[in-house]
Image (cartoon, rainbow over all chains, first blue to last red; front, side, top):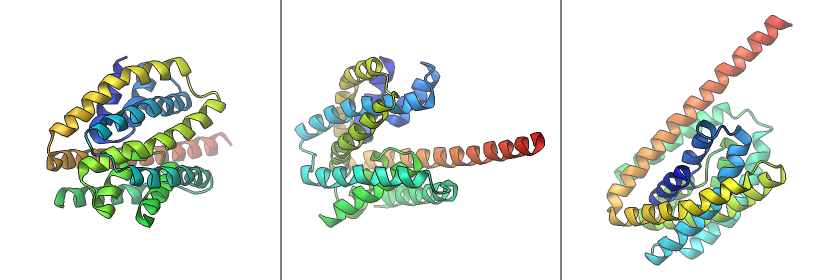
Length: 111
Length: 134
């Protein structure tokens, strides 16, 4: 119950899925294994994101076409990414990407 | 239009590769490359997350990794939280929300670095143990 509420708040506020909140809490509080936590978190996010989208749309913030144009190719992208992940050494990519995240955060702050 | 498709594809590949959620990539992509406001970007990111999470959840469910009762329970409870979170986001100004989001990105970057370096030390410990054992 608490996990769902916290995840919903987090997701609604930041426009992200909420896996950052759900996965660690399932691991820590409910004693989930890592795979079950990831799978269950994804299923929960479907509800959270769909509902939060509807509320955001009511506020007039939703760019429907962009959402479609990003969401559908992203499904293919995730499949490619997951496939690559089993075949590449992701360590250096992860560190490089952390640097990109920091740069993008700086860009947001300066804009 | 091509910009949006490129953001979706690139963010999806990175999310799959690094085990991140799409949202943390969709939002800055929409703000920086498509010039959406922080509020519009968050709303649009939420919508884009739905198909990604749905396909991921179905794939995980086939492997028996989804605890359906818990997912349903959390999903239904989260509706209240999600409505409150969206309302809170819409009370905050774009500048405040953008700053908060940038801090979240820094946090996730730090988590990614810690996880990556943690894996490294674990696998090197594993290698040492294997060597010692063999």
